[in-house]
Structure formats: C-alpha cells, structure tokens
Length: 283
Image (cartoon, rainbow, N blue to C red; front, side):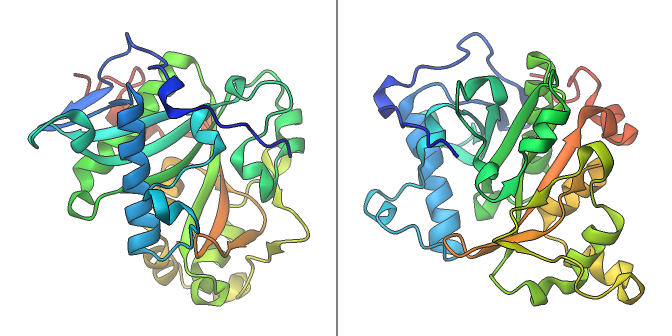
C-alpha cells in the first residue's frame, strides 16, 4: 500500500469554503472543518477519546496530544459543534468523522482500510462507482446521545448527496483485543450481515480473524444485537453489510470489521427520515 505524505497543517485550506452548515439541531451544528486550528481541535478530541479514554497506544502522538496520520491531509473532516459553548469554533467541537472520497487519493494512493482488508477486488468490481471512506469517528462523552449521532449522519448524508457519492465503506470497531469477548456479535455479523457476491471483501489472510465464533445455531439474536457497539449497530440498521473476517488492532486496542454500504442499500426508513436530499436538519 502506498503511504500518503502528510501536508503541513498550515497548508490545509478549507476544501469547500462555500459549503457552510450541513445541518443544525438546537445549539448543535454540523459542517466541515474550515482551517488548521479546527483540524488540530478534532485531532485532540480523537486523542482524548481513543488514547485517554479507551487506551489506544498512540506512542509519540502523546507528545502533541493529537491523533494524526498522513490521511488527515487529504480527507475532509466532519465536525459537530455546540454553538452554545464560548468560542472560537475550535473550542466548540464535540464530535468528528473523517471522510475520504476516492478521488482525493491520487495515483497510487490507498484507503486507510486497505492496510487491513483486501478491498482492491471490491473497488475493481465497481469501477465507476464513487466510493467514500468513513473513519476516525468519535464524540465527547457528554454528547453521546441521539442528537449528536443524528447530526453526524445528517452531515455524512448531505456530504454524499452534494458530491454524488454512492458507496460508503470503512472500519468500525469493537473494544478490546479478544474476539471471544464479542463472539455473539461477531457471529451475528458473519451469518446475518456478511457482504456477498459483487460486494464481498475480506480481511487480509495474514491478519484476519474468523468471525464465525459460535456457529449460526448458537446465536441468540437479542443478546447479539445488544452486544453490538452503537456505531456498528447504527450501520447495520442503515442497511450496511460487513466484510468476511475481523482484524485485531493492537495500537487502538480494538477489533475492526469492514463496513460496506452502497447508497441503494440504505433502509428506506432512514431515507424518509433524513430526506433523500438530506433536508431533515438542514440549516
């Protein structure tokens, strides 16, 4: 996989200065970052959640107090702000999601998830489709409620509509590094929500872990659904399918699964709720 070269933070202009707000719900607003100060703030939130709260071993990043990598320079960064907090806006960021359209990768570039999942055949089967990778999602503890999550989805959906993106993919995580602790949930995804046929993809053989840990007959659907992390459950309810095999990430102390969501597979209830034109929470 080609490694992207990071750009200096002060060379990151607002990618879409005319885009403005993507949604608003009470004092909460969602939009893309506009400057390097907001990117640094989003990276600090990621560090606080991933490292300080969930124990990710981010090594030298602890010195800067930010979670950052080379992909940050080519991604758009969706944020949720609490406009009721004292400004400036970089101090109001309470949630973030990283968005990487395929056309930002350039020649030889690769999605972040390509390091752990063999997605090249999937992308090749769907040449002409407009993929966007979703990742690095996190929300400050005090804001982990329905309103913040709804605005993040509002922002993603509005972004996809405005850029004519039609396939979302990316990694979603289970906490810890012991797959057996998530046997019911992983088995549920394997037997009831595995991507197949033209949408199939799998973890790289050298690092993949079998998700079929109980056998189909031993899955208790209620128990398994309750055991799903909120983000994974949200993807599942939207209509997403999941790759074959999981990957243990020792750095982030997580077990990652691959999410695959073509726009045409999104559950009609959610399209009705958010609006086919993403108008539900439009500012």
